[in-house]
Image (tube, rainbow, N blue to C red; front, top):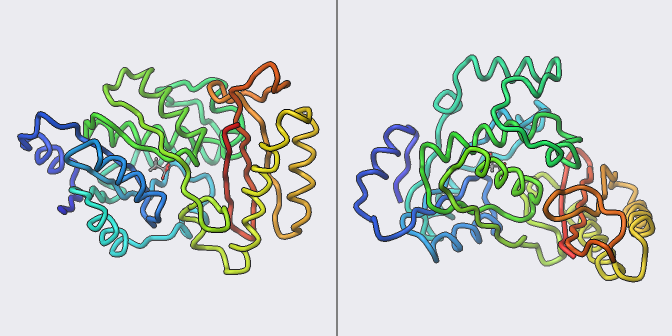
Length: 294
Ligand code: PAF
């Protein structure tokens, strides 16, 4: 496995690879890798050669400075996991490699005066107005900004994303379509811990007790899924809110049942069966999201 910090050197290396027969696979990450990420590497490994993984904690997608500062950074352990999973290339750029000072300043100003729409090159429309988009203003601008930069450097044939970030996947697909990028986006299933908690780098910040408690998040989603045909959407939402309330340490941020394509809330499951239930909660200082497709 070879590690690059420079985008230009990585680009040159990938160009010089004579492997025209096989697809180039790419897994973008922010590090603090877990089995969920490794499942993406394995999916890429099965279809591609080489497999490139980026590790970059992207400052422009954080709208909360303490979340950025507390984001776990475990580069050595990440590289060991990647090597064992058969990753060929790691791209680990510094912030200055990915962003000019001007871009970072613009982001800082956007956070301060909430002028998210300015300087935006892709318009996600209503896709970005709900759920994560509504609760983390500017987040998807930052995600699209870094992913488009990474796509331009790596020029992958296939890029792999986890379905835990359901809305992110829709945003990336929309971006790729709008910018006409020649990369196939592949969605991979959520990987869960034994108690059902969706794997996330943020789980590292939970205590053992909180990890136990956090199993309520997926239990709630699966319960709602089970009841999907016997209850109205309004009742399903009320049931989810009641379930979450049984654990005082968990604060519900949102629970939505949405169309899987448009991500807009649906009114009636019998009229729209392409539904996904999405949830975001705060457990202590840690924000967790999860979803289940009906
Ligand atoms: O899903 C993530 O880890 C990040 O949002 C991504 C796609 C690597 C962009 O920074």
